[in-house]
Image (cartoon, rainbow over all chains, first blue to last red):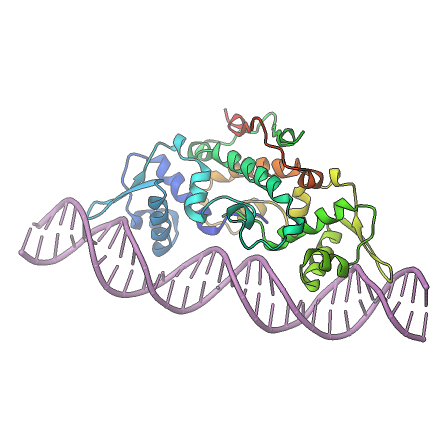
Length: 149
Length: 149
DNA sequence: ATAATTAAGGACTATTTTAGTCCTATTTAA
DNA sequence: TTAAATAGGACTAAAATAGTCCTTAATTAT
């Protein structure tokens, strides 16, 4: 189904809330209350986002989390990476060792093109786009086939 | 990690083998031997591909599987769909009922654009592309950001 | 100083998904 | 009629994901 994990989904909900009030510091507790996601789960997600430099944290009383950058500079790819590790459709794309399908695996090179394509797509969508009102595009142009000649 | 399942990976290996000898009928047993994937697993994958009209099967002695269309007309999206169901990054994108994150979920509309983008990307790559020798693209142009104005 | 508040890090359990196997029925060719 | 195949579905095992909890560290307010 090629889907994102629940945690990534939660992360976009959390980040979109934070993006709307981007100057304020929010504690994990507050975010949990606002989003309705259980506190331990919120904490886990926030920690991952800090490690990936999507958020910045301050400890102690009055501490909490803020966006590390403006929403325009936080890509969906960065969020996915933070929660799920590197974006790669196939196991091989990450490490090729242990791939026993040597015979059928000329495929590999071309998969990496597809990975790149999807990565670029996710890189070009930002948090700012996610919180923007929906716009129906007039045309959708994805010239992936042009990668091959 | 946004990755495909192993079964989908196997499927591409199987299909690329079949695409190279696209006129011949191949039995599950033969495909298992050639690819090194265990027979029960190969069978399971082949069944799914038949149900999704990617392959056509004939029963009985001398039966087996052939591609339903020429490789140029079998998209990677179709293969992923066959093995993993509809391509959608978020749960919401499939069915919105039961989504409790009503407050933060203006996001939904824009996610569907991203889903569409990725679907288009996978739709535009075919089995023929996968078995083609690798070409390094001169430029990669993905104007997703143009979807928003 | 001390207490209260808040994040960091990591270990752990439970749940769900995915992978893989196997059995029985059906179809077709020789 | 027999052997060779696929069809369909039930089932088990393994792995990944989600979710919780505990202990430590940092900061602020009293």
